[in-house]
Amino acid sequence: MKRREFLASTAVPAVLWAVACGGGDGEPDANFQTSFQVNSETNSSGHRHTMTVVCADFGGSDVRYTTSESANHVHMVTVTGAELTMLGSGSTVTKTISDQGHSHTWILMKPSTAC
Image (tube, rainbow, N blue to C red; front, side):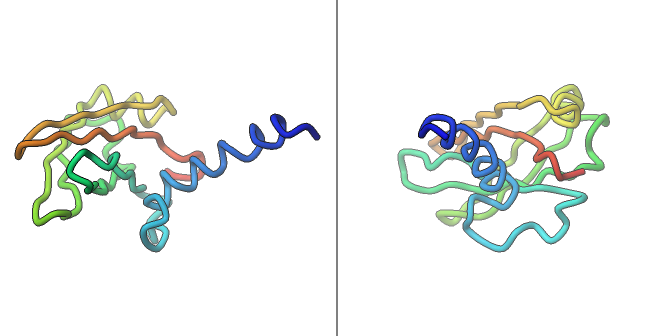
């Protein structure tokens, strides 16, 4: 197997694990069949937040999720009903919020073993 083929075959599972398990910062989501965690990027102030997406929200109306606390604050992230439907069907949804003087971006992707 060539190096490129090896890297391509191992890259996707590593990415899915990082998204599904909170990027390795803690224990895997105990409710992985009913929810999954997604980390924001680390912003210019050097912190990030985790958001838990609940599978029961797929196909419903807009949901406003509260992120984990980091740097002594949380954020509220609204995911629209249409975005939740897309996410439930396997599409990737990108959410960026700007408040409290800075921004965060989450790339929401349902792991294949969730929900």
